[in-house]
Length: 298
Image (cartoon, rainbow, N blue to C red; front, side, top):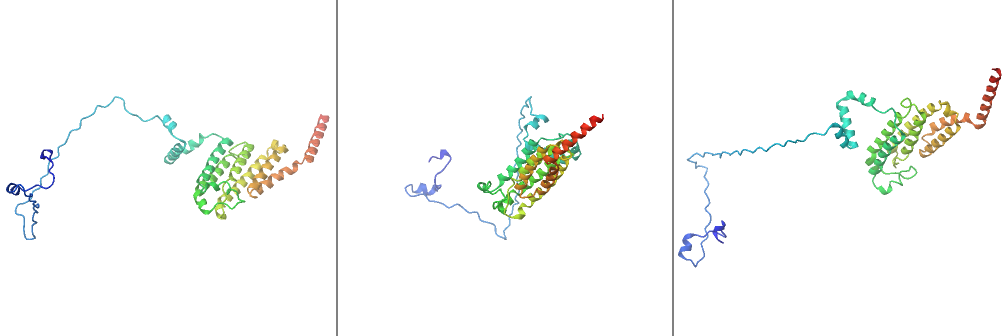
């Protein structure tokens, strides 16, 4: 290959050998190895280091455009946030400034609907089932009559179960007097929450069902409190159909919980006893008779 390309193929031949005998092969010489200094030898001339100065290249300044970026307004930033990001940002803000917590709670609505409570609780309940292993067994092992899920499944969903139970109790405590003035609204929230509580998966190990059983006890006490409040309403106590309907609902919840709501059920039955149809008819006749006597006296 020509040397004009800047590259020599093979080894460089010796000039003497090639001129003496052109037909013979070129002699290959070994590269000369530099001899190292011994221990007794010294360098006569000092070695000086030379640092090559670095040439700095001036950067050309680019022209700045007349339009520059700017952050979003607060209202637009809130619109672009999803629910999870907005909740986390708000919690961090309250932690950094605890003094605004009272102001924030004062801006909350006085009451919430049953559908709002159910939507939040159902989402947390679905999160439990999403984290359960062996999805094909989720529907058949959620009832206490069956064998139940194993310990591995409990470890997977323990945090989700605790979050659901805590949220359920918080929602119930906000929906009962004196937080709300409607005892009937409290009963509706209790009915929906108790139905969702019965759908929490059952586990084969008894200790893994401890939190659910404790929550049933708390829900039972809340039922008793609301029943005492609602029975003080004359319109509710005089309506036999109202008590009968809620008695049937509570009996169904007691069956689903395997007798864990027996205390509020017995309490509601005591208020139904004086409202027997024969006693109610006699009471109405006595009231009518007393009203006639009073009209005659007038």
